[in-house]
Image 1 (cartoon, rainbow, N blue to C red):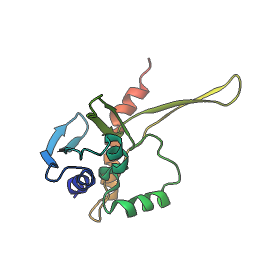
Image 2: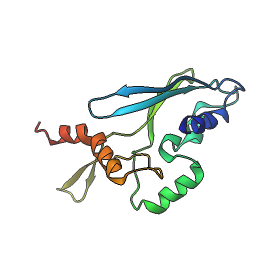
Image 3: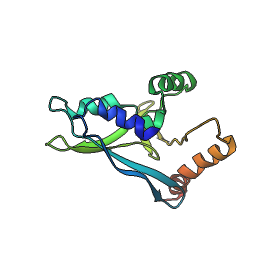
Image 4: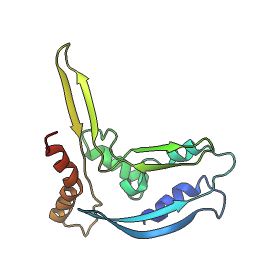
Length: 160
């Protein structure tokens, strides 16, 4: 479902027949979680700027699910706090227009705001989420969120 949604997002800007899925549902294992990973590529239409594709594809369908427009509306209704960088993107673009971007999950966002002349308020934000379906078990989903951030929390707990 998500691969099809992302193929559709890219297809709006791609030359006909150029959207490919060279890697479908590969498993990448980490110390605390397993990830299913797919790679989707496309050759852009000649009049399409790469940033048009990037902004037109956000938020990522792997975060929102489908239908994307309604999912984003529901997320906005349910979440009282902005996500900041979480589930946004970070990447690079080469001079030839190629690049690579990722979705910011399992990412620490650090900030400091000046509350007065002498006191800086420093903070770290860390989020976790999971795909909720009708068949989801709420306790298992909650544990998955804890598993996803476990390594980052362990690093934050260390004295430096």
